[in-house]
Image 1 (cartoon, protein in one colour):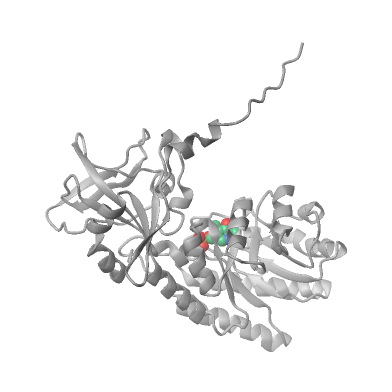
Image 2 (image 1 turned 45 degrees about the vertical axis):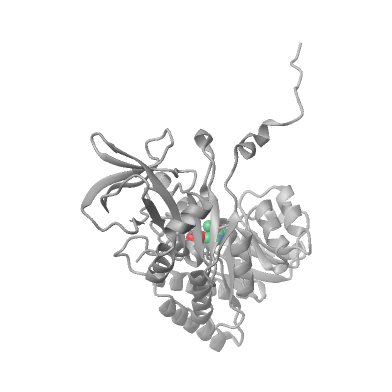
Length: 419
Ligand SMILES: *Cc1c(COP(=O)(O)O)cnc(C)c1O
């Protein structure tokens, strides 16, 4: 099921007045739904001491939403200077931030080390020497290669650019110890939009087995394992939801077994993005043109600058048209970009729509506006938050032309030619 019936009902009953008040298009997020998911995640892993979710900021980098995550007790998973700044601006410090980056520059490592630092998750053995200063607590991202089959979206680990290879991992920790590390974590991220919970259970089991092996080789203990993000959500009406409760209880059992055998157990961390906010966002856009050529097109006032998942991955986003239940027809829902993959839906069954109708594009709460871009001079839309008390708050204004032109104001700089 895409957006919950509860969110749809609360939104659709007031949609026209919200659209008139703020104008279209906009992404709107549901505070109530986000908090409920946070509570469900806490409950599912509550049996694991020290469980912590680090919200993957890249999924929805808006301070208002990040504040909700913080109020629910979660930390932040960052991979850029901007994400670190956002997190720290909200007061997150040290162990509340996980920095999981790839091909990381010195500038990024310096930012990560500022303000008391954060948990560094290194993506390659070479970074042991490249980090300006080795922190006490260090984590490596592990890539199991052909020891695991890839999840269908993220692909095969052997072909993935991420992480330290199996044969390098013990040496990676040994080298970090030489440089002064004395506390350890182990991370992996093997899936994306995975709705089969057993894949995540196998990942947790794999990490615990790795911890057992590396600990034995080096005589060290691990403080945490981080199973990454990648928990999936049902985008299509007949997709089954991930069974969070079963995932929680089977992973808890794996941690209990580790404790029974070793007398201690690492904490478990997770850095989920999509699962936390994805279903709790909608892109609302107005139909502004109907075109009948070889196909019927519903032209809307949003384009790929608001949501590029359909164009980029052929991703399905459910669409509803509140108030229209009439004749079903087959249409493409298209934006204004000069790019034929600027379509929110292709050959989709929708009720007959008319100019002026509002279309709700579901599940845009993660990797939605965050992936937006300015190709063709198209600007990114505003973001709204539907509060638990029913008020609706602007939490990011729409981009304006002066934002688009900002990088064209600069001091002249010309390097003379030779000769
Ligand atoms: C993208 C990403 C996440 C979040 O992924 P979701 O699929 O949104 O859960 C977490 N960790 C890392 C390292 C990532 O790159």
